[in-house]
Length: 381
Image 1 (cartoon, one colour):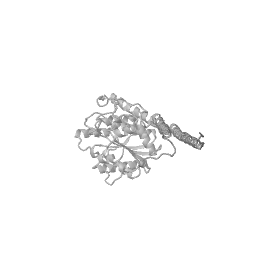
Image 2 (cartoon, rainbow, N blue to C red; image 1 turned 45 degrees about the vertical axis):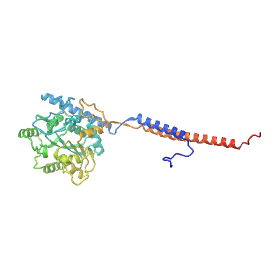
Image 3 (cartoon, rainbow, N blue to C red; image 1 turned 120 degrees about the vertical axis):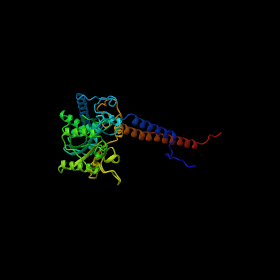
Image 4 (cartoon, rainbow, N blue to C red; image 1 turned 30 degrees about the horizontal axis):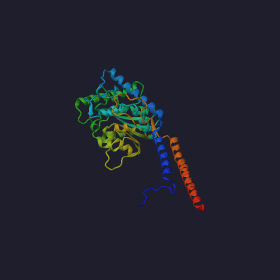
């Protein structure tokens, strides 16, 4: 029967077992004692997260001053940036778990990571599409762009899905004004659309439309009134290009699932969450602002599928308390200790050298003794 494994000839099983023991011990040490290593752009990530938290606190304070109740059933962490279930301006269904997860200010650090990987520098133009559905992620995006000193061109979808900025008297565009008035964020949306299905509030009541019109009028910015989803996409691209004034747009950031920005629920899933450096593969792609920028070769940051993003970066899912700043793999990650790994490799080679040499030497000594013994003449009787 043939052997199923190979081992050096002349080396005993005892020596091989000792070498295996050293290798196993080295592996255990490397796995058991990792080092906590700061990730790239650590200071900027912390600064962006702190600014995001300050913005969230400012919005909460403004809500209380306006007499808007913070519903602890939907907002157990008392963040003040989670909305109610149903209101006249609620455009679509939403998932409370995703909305609670998004209140983590450390998402601003994730945005820093993606934008830096996209090579965004101070003064670079970044196009942004936000909606009222994820006000906390809008805040994280704004905080990251301010920290990087980028120049954003922002278009908002005014309406909100469940648990977003869906209070008729204090919607996302109102929150932007609060951040401007408090001196926290120096920019805001330059245009807004009604949002909702097809970016035209398909299915919303007349009262809801009236309230949304009032919110956009308070913002005092141009309103995109489109005839179709394609028309909404065309108008957004035209506004971005006009405001760029011939300068290159270096990235596009989409927050949430605005119809024009992502191109229906199908287009939303065709881009991966996070940084997309090229368009998705395939021929049957849903038209959207994201896709058009991607086809231009512009990096696209897609803030969607929040649970997956949170899991990747070590963030809690559906937190019921405020999440401290500086928590998560985006700041510090456990990595193998390179010195311990090198020491383990050295120990294995040293063991191989020592044990094999000792074992072979012992065998040679035993062989010589046996040969000497065989050469001795037998005593005469």
